[in-house]
Image 1 (cartoon, one colour):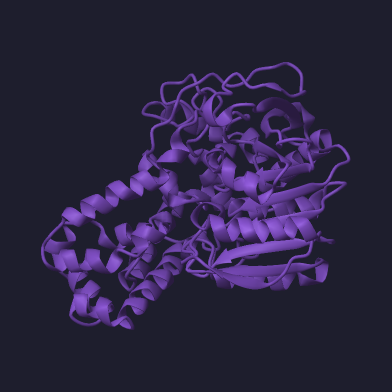
Image 2 (cartoon, one colour):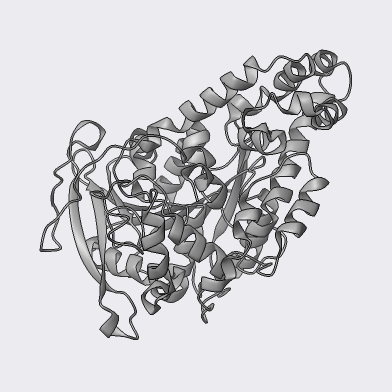
Length: 470
Protein backbone atom coordinates (compact mmCIF):
# COMPACT_ATOMS: atom_id res chain seq x y z
CA UNK A 1 0.00 0.00 0.00
CA UNK A 2 1.38 3.43 -0.92
CA UNK A 3 0.98 6.92 0.45
CA UNK A 4 -0.87 8.04 -2.66
CA UNK A 5 -4.04 6.25 -1.50
CA UNK A 6 -4.30 8.06 1.83
CA UNK A 7 -6.93 10.54 0.72
CA UNK A 8 -8.99 7.96 -1.05
CA UNK A 9 -9.34 5.85 2.05
CA UNK A 10 -9.97 8.63 4.54
CA UNK A 11 -13.15 10.55 5.30
CA UNK A 12 -11.05 13.70 5.48
CA UNK A 13 -9.68 16.00 2.82
CA UNK A 14 -8.19 14.22 -0.19
CA UNK A 15 -5.40 16.68 -0.82
CA UNK A 16 -3.62 15.92 2.45
CA UNK A 17 -1.73 13.11 0.71
CA UNK A 18 1.75 13.04 -0.63
CA UNK A 19 3.04 16.23 1.00
CA UNK A 20 6.50 16.13 2.60
CA UNK A 21 6.52 15.96 6.37
CA UNK A 22 8.90 17.48 8.86
CA UNK A 23 10.67 15.14 11.27
CA UNK A 24 10.76 15.96 14.96
CA UNK A 25 10.83 14.12 18.25
CA UNK A 26 7.41 13.79 19.91
CA UNK A 27 6.74 15.63 23.14
CA UNK A 28 7.66 13.57 26.16
CA UNK A 29 6.77 14.42 29.74
CA UNK A 30 5.95 12.06 32.60
CA UNK A 31 3.11 14.19 33.97
CA UNK A 32 -0.17 15.10 32.33
CA UNK A 33 0.13 18.83 32.98
CA UNK A 34 0.71 21.23 30.10
CA UNK A 35 4.29 22.29 29.41
CA UNK A 36 5.80 24.46 26.66
CA UNK A 37 6.06 22.37 23.48
CA UNK A 38 9.61 21.65 22.28
CA UNK A 39 8.57 22.36 18.68
CA UNK A 40 6.83 25.66 19.47
CA UNK A 41 8.32 27.59 16.57
CA UNK A 42 6.68 29.43 13.70
CA UNK A 43 2.97 28.64 13.50
CA UNK A 44 3.24 26.55 16.68
CA UNK A 45 4.78 29.38 18.74
CA UNK A 46 3.33 29.66 22.22
CA UNK A 47 1.70 26.24 22.13
CA UNK A 48 1.64 24.00 25.20
CA UNK A 49 1.69 20.20 25.15
CA UNK A 50 0.49 17.46 27.46
CA UNK A 51 0.16 13.69 27.52
CA UNK A 52 -2.71 11.91 29.21
CA UNK A 53 -3.15 8.19 29.92
CA UNK A 54 -6.44 6.52 29.03
CA UNK A 55 -7.25 2.77 29.24
CA UNK A 56 -6.95 1.01 25.90
CA UNK A 57 -10.03 -0.94 26.92
CA UNK A 58 -12.01 0.20 29.98
CA UNK A 59 -13.31 -3.37 30.36
CA UNK A 60 -9.88 -5.02 30.22
CA UNK A 61 -7.24 -2.97 32.01
CA UNK A 62 -4.64 -5.69 31.45
CA UNK A 63 -4.24 -4.39 27.90
CA UNK A 64 -2.66 -1.24 29.27
CA UNK A 65 -3.14 2.40 28.38
CA UNK A 66 -3.14 4.70 25.38
CA UNK A 67 -1.07 7.84 25.74
CA UNK A 68 -2.99 10.76 24.29
CA UNK A 69 -1.22 13.85 22.99
CA UNK A 70 -2.96 17.21 23.20
CA UNK A 71 -1.72 20.64 22.20
CA UNK A 72 -3.16 23.90 23.55
CA UNK A 73 -2.94 27.30 21.88
CA UNK A 74 -3.86 29.86 24.56
CA UNK A 75 -6.29 32.57 23.49
CA UNK A 76 -5.11 36.14 23.19
CA UNK A 77 -5.60 38.13 26.37
CA UNK A 78 -7.76 36.80 29.18
CA UNK A 79 -9.16 33.42 28.12
CA UNK A 80 -12.88 33.40 27.36
CA UNK A 81 -12.99 29.60 27.50
CA UNK A 82 -11.87 26.75 25.30
CA UNK A 83 -12.82 25.01 22.07
CA UNK A 84 -11.86 21.42 21.33
CA UNK A 85 -11.01 20.80 17.68
CA UNK A 86 -11.55 17.18 16.57
CA UNK A 87 -9.89 16.12 13.34
CA UNK A 88 -11.30 13.94 10.59
CA UNK A 89 -9.85 10.94 8.88
CA UNK A 90 -10.40 8.75 10.88
CA UNK A 91 -6.60 8.65 10.59
CA UNK A 92 -5.89 12.38 10.76
CA UNK A 93 -4.14 13.94 13.73
CA UNK A 94 -4.70 17.38 15.20
CA UNK A 95 -2.03 18.68 12.83
CA UNK A 96 -4.88 19.04 10.30
CA UNK A 97 -5.74 22.27 12.10
CA UNK A 98 -2.30 23.84 12.47
CA UNK A 99 -2.35 25.62 9.08
CA UNK A 100 -5.79 27.04 9.92
CA UNK A 101 -5.03 28.55 13.32
CA UNK A 102 -5.83 32.09 12.18
CA UNK A 103 -9.22 30.95 10.89
CA UNK A 104 -10.08 29.26 14.18
CA UNK A 105 -8.80 32.20 16.23
CA UNK A 106 -11.08 34.48 14.22
CA UNK A 107 -14.03 32.11 14.62
CA UNK A 108 -13.44 31.68 18.38
CA UNK A 109 -11.87 35.01 19.45
CA UNK A 110 -10.20 34.81 22.86
CA UNK A 111 -10.76 31.08 23.28
CA UNK A 112 -8.02 28.54 23.97
CA UNK A 113 -7.73 26.08 21.10
CA UNK A 114 -7.43 22.51 22.40
CA UNK A 115 -6.22 20.10 19.72
CA UNK A 116 -5.82 16.40 20.60
CA UNK A 117 -4.40 13.60 18.49
CA UNK A 118 -7.05 10.91 18.95
CA UNK A 119 -5.83 7.38 19.67
CA UNK A 120 -4.00 5.86 16.74
CA UNK A 121 -2.92 9.19 15.23
CA UNK A 122 -0.15 11.75 15.50
CA UNK A 123 1.87 11.67 18.71
CA UNK A 124 -0.74 9.58 20.54
CA UNK A 125 -0.36 5.81 20.94
CA UNK A 126 -0.39 4.13 17.53
CA UNK A 127 -1.61 0.79 16.26
CA UNK A 128 1.97 -0.03 15.23
CA UNK A 129 4.06 1.97 17.74
CA UNK A 130 7.50 1.12 16.37
CA UNK A 131 6.67 1.45 12.68
CA UNK A 132 4.56 4.62 13.09
CA UNK A 133 7.06 6.35 15.36
CA UNK A 134 8.43 9.76 14.31
CA UNK A 135 11.91 8.23 14.63
CA UNK A 136 11.19 5.34 12.23
CA UNK A 137 12.44 5.49 8.60
CA UNK A 138 9.08 6.71 7.31
CA UNK A 139 8.30 8.89 10.30
CA UNK A 140 4.69 8.51 11.41
CA UNK A 141 3.80 7.14 7.95
CA UNK A 142 4.48 3.49 7.14
CA UNK A 143 7.21 2.95 4.59
CA UNK A 144 8.58 -0.07 2.75
CA UNK A 145 9.37 -3.00 5.02
CA UNK A 146 7.48 -1.37 7.90
CA UNK A 147 4.26 -2.69 6.37
CA UNK A 148 5.48 -6.25 6.79
CA UNK A 149 6.23 -5.83 10.49
CA UNK A 150 3.14 -3.73 11.21
CA UNK A 151 0.49 -5.96 9.65
CA UNK A 152 0.91 -8.96 12.02
CA UNK A 153 0.37 -6.63 14.99
CA UNK A 154 -3.04 -5.69 13.60
CA UNK A 155 -4.37 -9.22 14.22
CA UNK A 156 -4.11 -8.90 18.02
CA UNK A 157 -6.78 -8.08 20.66
CA UNK A 158 -5.05 -4.74 21.24
CA UNK A 159 -6.03 -3.57 17.74
CA UNK A 160 -9.72 -4.01 18.48
CA UNK A 161 -9.49 -1.40 21.26
CA UNK A 162 -8.95 1.38 18.70
CA UNK A 163 -12.68 1.91 18.24
CA UNK A 164 -14.74 5.03 17.76
CA UNK A 165 -16.39 4.43 21.12
CA UNK A 166 -13.09 4.17 22.98
CA UNK A 167 -11.84 7.29 21.20
CA UNK A 168 -15.04 8.99 22.39
CA UNK A 169 -14.28 7.96 25.98
CA UNK A 170 -10.78 9.39 25.52
CA UNK A 171 -12.18 12.73 24.39
CA UNK A 172 -14.59 12.92 27.30
CA UNK A 173 -11.76 12.17 29.75
CA UNK A 174 -9.51 14.79 28.15
CA UNK A 175 -12.21 17.43 28.35
CA UNK A 176 -12.86 16.54 32.00
CA UNK A 177 -9.14 16.71 32.85
CA UNK A 178 -8.35 19.98 31.11
CA UNK A 179 -11.75 21.60 30.83
CA UNK A 180 -12.15 23.21 34.22
CA UNK A 181 -15.37 25.16 34.77
CA UNK A 182 -15.28 27.52 31.81
CA UNK A 183 -17.24 28.07 28.62
CA UNK A 184 -16.53 25.14 26.29
CA UNK A 185 -17.28 24.45 22.64
CA UNK A 186 -16.69 21.29 20.63
CA UNK A 187 -15.88 21.40 16.92
CA UNK A 188 -15.56 18.34 14.70
CA UNK A 189 -15.00 17.94 10.98
CA UNK A 190 -15.96 14.92 8.85
CA UNK A 191 -15.06 11.78 10.86
CA UNK A 192 -14.60 14.20 13.76
CA UNK A 193 -18.36 14.82 13.67
CA UNK A 194 -18.97 11.08 14.10
CA UNK A 195 -16.56 11.03 17.03
CA UNK A 196 -18.13 14.13 18.59
CA UNK A 197 -21.64 12.65 18.39
CA UNK A 198 -20.44 9.32 19.79
CA UNK A 199 -18.87 11.23 22.71
CA UNK A 200 -22.16 12.97 23.44
CA UNK A 201 -23.94 9.60 23.36
CA UNK A 202 -21.48 7.75 25.62
CA UNK A 203 -20.03 10.27 28.07
CA UNK A 204 -21.13 13.87 27.48
CA UNK A 205 -18.80 16.47 29.00
CA UNK A 206 -19.98 18.10 32.24
CA UNK A 207 -20.09 21.51 30.60
CA UNK A 208 -20.59 22.09 26.90
CA UNK A 209 -21.95 25.41 25.64
CA UNK A 210 -22.20 24.48 21.98
CA UNK A 211 -21.20 22.08 19.21
CA UNK A 212 -20.11 22.92 15.66
CA UNK A 213 -20.23 20.09 13.12
CA UNK A 214 -18.39 20.83 9.86
CA UNK A 215 -19.11 18.46 6.94
CA UNK A 216 -21.39 16.22 8.98
CA UNK A 217 -21.32 12.47 8.33
CA UNK A 218 -24.60 10.63 7.58
CA UNK A 219 -26.24 8.55 10.33
CA UNK A 220 -24.44 5.38 11.41
CA UNK A 221 -25.48 2.46 9.27
CA UNK A 222 -26.61 4.60 6.35
CA UNK A 223 -26.63 2.36 3.25
CA UNK A 224 -26.66 5.17 0.69
CA UNK A 225 -23.85 7.52 1.65
CA UNK A 226 -21.47 5.15 3.46
CA UNK A 227 -17.86 4.76 2.29
CA UNK A 228 -18.64 1.92 -0.10
CA UNK A 229 -20.81 4.38 -2.05
CA UNK A 230 -18.19 7.13 -2.17
CA UNK A 231 -17.85 6.94 -5.98
CA UNK A 232 -21.60 7.45 -6.35
CA UNK A 233 -21.39 10.50 -4.06
CA UNK A 234 -18.43 11.91 -6.00
CA UNK A 235 -20.21 11.29 -9.31
CA UNK A 236 -23.29 13.26 -8.24
CA UNK A 237 -21.18 16.31 -7.41
CA UNK A 238 -19.19 16.00 -10.63
CA UNK A 239 -22.37 15.87 -12.69
CA UNK A 240 -23.61 19.01 -10.93
CA UNK A 241 -20.44 20.79 -12.04
CA UNK A 242 -20.97 19.66 -15.63
CA UNK A 243 -24.65 20.65 -15.48
CA UNK A 244 -23.68 24.15 -14.36
CA UNK A 245 -21.46 24.40 -17.44
CA UNK A 246 -24.34 23.33 -19.67
CA UNK A 247 -26.51 26.28 -18.57
CA UNK A 248 -23.67 28.77 -19.01
CA UNK A 249 -23.54 29.87 -22.64
CA UNK A 250 -19.82 30.74 -22.61
CA UNK A 251 -18.89 27.44 -20.95
CA UNK A 252 -21.06 25.47 -23.33
CA UNK A 253 -19.57 27.28 -26.32
CA UNK A 254 -16.05 26.45 -25.15
CA UNK A 255 -16.93 22.77 -25.30
CA UNK A 256 -18.98 22.99 -28.47
CA UNK A 257 -22.10 21.69 -26.75
CA UNK A 258 -22.95 19.56 -23.74
CA UNK A 259 -20.22 19.26 -21.10
CA UNK A 260 -21.38 15.74 -20.28
CA UNK A 261 -21.06 14.64 -23.90
CA UNK A 262 -17.68 16.34 -24.28
CA UNK A 263 -16.44 14.56 -21.17
CA UNK A 264 -17.85 11.21 -22.33
CA UNK A 265 -15.95 11.64 -25.59
CA UNK A 266 -12.70 12.09 -23.66
CA UNK A 267 -13.38 9.01 -21.54
CA UNK A 268 -14.07 6.95 -24.65
CA UNK A 269 -10.81 7.93 -26.35
CA UNK A 270 -7.84 5.97 -24.90
CA UNK A 271 -5.31 8.40 -26.41
CA UNK A 272 -6.91 11.38 -24.72
CA UNK A 273 -7.49 9.55 -21.44
CA UNK A 274 -3.79 8.70 -21.41
CA UNK A 275 -2.97 12.43 -21.25
CA UNK A 276 -4.54 12.61 -17.77
CA UNK A 277 -2.00 12.30 -14.90
CA UNK A 278 -2.20 8.73 -13.65
CA UNK A 279 -4.13 7.66 -16.73
CA UNK A 280 -7.44 7.46 -14.85
CA UNK A 281 -9.56 10.48 -15.82
CA UNK A 282 -12.60 9.56 -13.72
CA UNK A 283 -10.47 9.42 -10.58
CA UNK A 284 -8.39 12.49 -11.46
CA UNK A 285 -11.41 14.71 -12.13
CA UNK A 286 -13.09 13.32 -9.02
CA UNK A 287 -10.14 14.53 -6.92
CA UNK A 288 -10.43 18.05 -8.37
CA UNK A 289 -13.89 18.40 -6.80
CA UNK A 290 -12.27 18.90 -3.38
CA UNK A 291 -10.63 22.19 -4.39
CA UNK A 292 -13.02 24.95 -5.56
CA UNK A 293 -10.45 26.73 -7.80
CA UNK A 294 -9.64 23.45 -9.54
CA UNK A 295 -13.25 22.33 -9.68
CA UNK A 296 -14.01 25.53 -11.62
CA UNK A 297 -11.37 24.59 -14.20
CA UNK A 298 -12.88 21.20 -15.06
CA UNK A 299 -14.63 22.42 -18.26
CA UNK A 300 -11.48 24.05 -19.61
CA UNK A 301 -9.47 20.92 -18.76
CA UNK A 302 -11.97 18.82 -20.72
CA UNK A 303 -11.62 21.25 -23.62
CA UNK A 304 -7.82 20.91 -23.48
CA UNK A 305 -8.06 17.12 -23.57
CA UNK A 306 -10.37 17.23 -26.56
CA UNK A 307 -7.71 19.28 -28.32
CA UNK A 308 -5.05 16.74 -27.36
CA UNK A 309 -3.28 19.11 -24.95
CA UNK A 310 -2.25 17.47 -21.66
CA UNK A 311 -0.21 20.37 -20.26
CA UNK A 312 -3.13 22.04 -18.42
CA UNK A 313 -3.80 18.69 -16.74
CA UNK A 314 -0.21 18.52 -15.49
CA UNK A 315 -0.57 22.02 -14.08
CA UNK A 316 -3.84 21.04 -12.39
CA UNK A 317 -2.08 18.14 -10.69
CA UNK A 318 0.68 20.47 -9.46
CA UNK A 319 -1.92 22.93 -8.19
CA UNK A 320 -3.82 20.16 -6.40
CA UNK A 321 -0.64 19.12 -4.59
CA UNK A 322 0.05 22.76 -3.66
CA UNK A 323 -3.52 23.10 -2.37
CA UNK A 324 -2.84 20.50 0.32
CA UNK A 325 0.88 21.14 0.85
CA UNK A 326 0.52 23.26 4.04
CA UNK A 327 -0.97 20.28 5.89
CA UNK A 328 2.11 18.11 5.49
CA UNK A 329 4.62 20.26 7.33
CA UNK A 330 4.32 18.54 10.71
CA UNK A 331 5.80 15.32 12.05
CA UNK A 332 2.44 13.88 13.10
CA UNK A 333 0.64 14.93 9.89
CA UNK A 334 0.56 11.67 7.84
CA UNK A 335 -2.66 9.70 8.02
CA UNK A 336 -2.54 6.41 9.89
CA UNK A 337 -3.56 3.98 7.18
CA UNK A 338 -3.98 1.08 9.67
CA UNK A 339 -6.46 3.14 11.70
CA UNK A 340 -8.29 4.37 8.61
CA UNK A 341 -8.70 0.81 7.39
CA UNK A 342 -9.80 -0.52 10.79
CA UNK A 343 -12.50 2.06 11.52
CA UNK A 344 -13.69 2.29 7.92
CA UNK A 345 -14.22 -1.47 7.74
CA UNK A 346 -15.76 -1.71 11.21
CA UNK A 347 -18.10 1.28 11.34
CA UNK A 348 -18.58 2.95 7.96
CA UNK A 349 -18.87 0.25 5.30
CA UNK A 350 -22.41 -0.90 4.56
CA UNK A 351 -21.21 -3.51 2.03
CA UNK A 352 -18.45 -5.54 3.71
CA UNK A 353 -18.84 -8.41 1.23
CA UNK A 354 -18.37 -6.18 -1.80
CA UNK A 355 -15.92 -7.53 -4.38
CA UNK A 356 -13.56 -5.73 -6.73
CA UNK A 357 -15.69 -6.90 -9.65
CA UNK A 358 -18.69 -5.15 -8.10
CA UNK A 359 -16.67 -1.99 -7.55
CA UNK A 360 -15.52 -1.98 -11.18
CA UNK A 361 -19.03 -2.67 -12.50
CA UNK A 362 -20.45 0.22 -10.47
CA UNK A 363 -17.69 2.58 -11.61
CA UNK A 364 -18.37 1.68 -15.26
CA UNK A 365 -21.57 3.70 -15.27
CA UNK A 366 -20.10 6.72 -13.46
CA UNK A 367 -18.27 9.77 -14.80
CA UNK A 368 -16.38 10.63 -11.60
CA UNK A 369 -15.09 8.07 -9.09
CA UNK A 370 -13.10 7.63 -5.89
CA UNK A 371 -10.58 4.88 -5.26
CA UNK A 372 -12.01 4.42 -1.76
CA UNK A 373 -14.56 1.65 -2.53
CA UNK A 374 -11.81 -0.49 -4.01
CA UNK A 375 -9.63 0.06 -0.96
CA UNK A 376 -12.43 -1.31 1.25
CA UNK A 377 -12.51 -4.66 -0.53
CA UNK A 378 -11.27 -7.45 1.73
CA UNK A 379 -10.96 -5.21 4.79
CA UNK A 380 -13.70 -6.87 6.83
CA UNK A 381 -11.38 -9.60 8.12
CA UNK A 382 -9.73 -7.37 10.73
CA UNK A 383 -12.85 -5.40 11.63
CA UNK A 384 -14.00 -5.17 15.23
CA UNK A 385 -17.68 -5.80 16.10
CA UNK A 386 -19.93 -2.77 16.37
CA UNK A 387 -20.91 -2.02 19.95
CA UNK A 388 -24.15 -0.89 21.56
CA UNK A 389 -23.41 2.76 20.82
CA UNK A 390 -23.30 2.30 17.05
CA UNK A 391 -26.27 4.26 15.72
CA UNK A 392 -27.21 5.60 19.15
CA UNK A 393 -28.00 9.30 19.22
CA UNK A 394 -27.17 11.60 22.15
CA UNK A 395 -29.92 11.73 24.72
CA UNK A 396 -29.42 15.47 25.05
CA UNK A 397 -27.81 17.76 22.52
CA UNK A 398 -26.28 21.13 23.40
CA UNK A 399 -26.97 23.98 20.94
CA UNK A 400 -25.53 22.60 17.71
CA UNK A 401 -24.63 24.32 14.46
CA UNK A 402 -24.09 22.19 11.34
CA UNK A 403 -22.13 23.67 8.44
CA UNK A 404 -22.44 21.80 5.15
CA UNK A 405 -21.43 22.42 1.56
CA UNK A 406 -23.94 21.59 -1.17
CA UNK A 407 -21.09 20.35 -3.40
CA UNK A 408 -19.39 18.17 -0.81
CA UNK A 409 -18.00 15.06 -2.56
CA UNK A 410 -17.33 13.20 0.70
CA UNK A 411 -20.11 13.88 3.19
CA UNK A 412 -23.04 14.93 0.99
CA UNK A 413 -25.67 17.46 1.95
CA UNK A 414 -28.44 14.84 1.82
CA UNK A 415 -26.60 12.70 4.37
CA UNK A 416 -26.16 15.69 6.69
CA UNK A 417 -29.85 16.55 6.35
CA UNK A 418 -30.75 12.99 7.35
CA UNK A 419 -28.47 13.21 10.39
CA UNK A 420 -29.89 16.58 11.44
CA UNK A 421 -33.44 15.23 11.15
CA UNK A 422 -32.52 12.31 13.41
CA UNK A 423 -31.00 14.65 16.02
CA UNK A 424 -33.78 17.25 16.23
CA UNK A 425 -35.52 15.66 19.21
CA UNK A 426 -32.31 15.76 21.28
CA UNK A 427 -31.84 19.52 21.32
CA UNK A 428 -31.57 22.75 19.32
CA UNK A 429 -29.80 22.11 16.01
CA UNK A 430 -29.65 24.10 12.78
CA UNK A 431 -28.12 23.49 9.37
CA UNK A 432 -26.35 26.29 7.50
CA UNK A 433 -25.57 25.47 3.91
CA UNK A 434 -22.63 26.87 1.96
CA UNK A 435 -23.64 27.16 -1.69
CA UNK A 436 -20.80 25.83 -3.79
CA UNK A 437 -19.06 24.57 -0.66
CA UNK A 438 -17.06 21.33 -0.79
CA UNK A 439 -15.65 19.40 2.20
CA UNK A 440 -13.96 20.86 5.35
CA UNK A 441 -15.47 24.35 5.23
CA UNK A 442 -13.09 25.81 7.80
CA UNK A 443 -10.46 25.32 5.08
CA UNK A 444 -12.37 25.67 1.82
CA UNK A 445 -14.90 28.38 2.81
CA UNK A 446 -13.23 30.29 5.68
CA UNK A 447 -15.26 33.51 5.33
CA UNK A 448 -18.58 31.66 5.57
CA UNK A 449 -17.19 29.53 8.39
CA UNK A 450 -15.90 32.41 10.52
CA UNK A 451 -19.06 34.51 10.15
CA UNK A 452 -21.37 31.63 11.08
CA UNK A 453 -19.28 30.41 14.03
CA UNK A 454 -18.68 33.88 15.46
CA UNK A 455 -22.42 34.52 15.56
CA UNK A 456 -23.10 31.12 17.11
CA UNK A 457 -20.43 31.53 19.81
CA UNK A 458 -21.78 34.98 20.70
CA UNK A 459 -25.42 33.90 21.01
CA UNK A 460 -25.28 30.12 21.53
CA UNK A 461 -28.26 29.98 19.20
CA UNK A 462 -27.93 27.84 16.06
CA UNK A 463 -29.62 29.58 13.14
CA UNK A 464 -30.50 28.12 9.75
CA UNK A 465 -29.36 29.92 6.63
CA UNK A 466 -27.08 29.92 3.61
CA UNK A 467 -23.81 31.45 2.56
CA UNK A 468 -22.26 31.56 -0.89
CA UNK A 469 -18.72 30.46 -1.57
CA UNK A 470 -18.45 32.96 -4.43
